[in-house]
Length: 296
Ligand code: AMP
Ligand code: FE
Ligand code: FE
Ligand code: ZN
Image (spheres, helix red, strand yellow):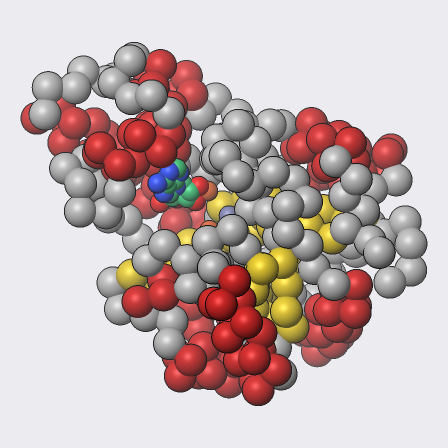
């Protein structure tokens, strides 16, 4: 049985390891195929692919696109799109600009609560990141002694509803599915019943996204209780969606998300690659080839 972990983050977004280091750690953890899915950026692809080739570890380049539906954050995994697609890059660029613009606003809010954090404090934590996130602010809070760890910083200030929370631009998930498909890639809905997205991602809404061209559902994820996974698996069957599983590893940034703690079945991975090939053919785009040392 091969270990296929299709959702991980490097320090190009809010993971803590550089892409090559992430690949080395995946190899050490016995992962056969790794999906690199940084938030809203393709920046880590080249480095990760080079290290994957060197070590003979499979690598599927992707991204986790921050979307919003009905005011609630929803994450869309996008695999194997043309990284030079103008429209998709325009959308990701808008998301990243929103991420950058939000940081000074968060710092203003925190200052009102007596927390003295500078943009340089955050920049120091996000040095390697193309895509800036609240976790970098969290790391700055930890470094300045205002929080124990990322989770503590989110619980105190950064989670939605807390005093340091500031919203930002996020696209509609169905539109992102359309853009990724036009760019020759495929979409998998990330942790649909996790944290907040369970509020809006009803069976019916997931059905609508399947209509819009969604290829798969991330079923096996730490944020889903076992009975939730059973229900999502059934739903995937009804809607003919590929079932994936993954760690959502963030390096030292998230506990209980060790590399390979959840995986995707080989036959489901093969179906996902099939759908990606069809999307690539239909789009006529120059899509990246996944690096796969074995034939799935
Ligand atoms: P952002 O992308 O800036 O909106 O921040 C969201 C990211 O923060 C998620 O992708 C997680 O990696 C991280 N995150 C969200 N909630 C928590 C939490 N309670 N503890 C630690 N990390 C969190
Ligand atoms: Fe994250
Ligand atoms: Fe996510
Ligand atoms: Zn993630």
